[in-house]
Image (cartoon, rainbow, N blue to C red; front, side, top):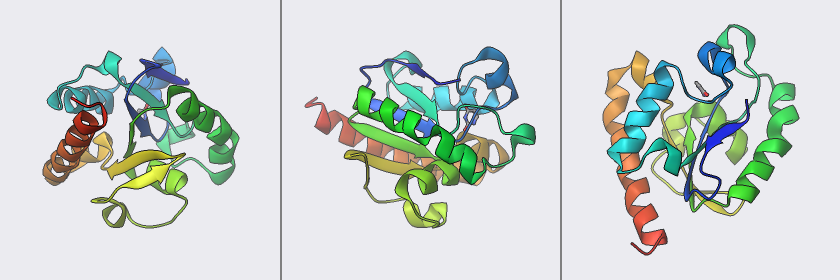
Amino acid sequence: MFGSGDPDADLMFIGEGPGAEEDRQGLPFVGRAGELLTKIIQAIGLERDQVYIANIVKCRPPGNRDPQPEEVSACRRYLEQQIDLIQPKIIVLLGRVAAQTLLGNDLTLGRMRDQWHSVREVEARVTYHPAALLRNASFKRPTWEDMQVVRDRLAEASGR
Ligand code: URA
């Protein structure tokens, strides 16, 4: 399960790894968290097929556990090549695992939000994983705030 969407996308989302439904269909974010991600994308005026969606790990960690360091490193070069090929203008890192992996730290999600980072020379923003929003509705407002920042920066970067 590698990724999906427009290979020329300006906006790229990176999640953690496929869940059961993603594993079955071979596509990222097609389960409940994926439906919410689709709504988040639409809320900033885009459709799913206009962005690119990938994950840190390409195979489903059993029982939805966090991917182990050797699983992350096995998939890392692949993900880096995806980023380099797509060359998005902005990357959104969904959740702690994606953010810690690509920013190379062990900070909490709260510490990584609200600022621009750089991932392979691409501007990157950290927000909550949609699965976290399904568990805790109080994350919805800060996620929407993050996405508005992303939407505005994207418009600026694309000269719109
Ligand atoms: N959660 C993820 O991080 N990625 C998916 O593809 C689905 C759920």
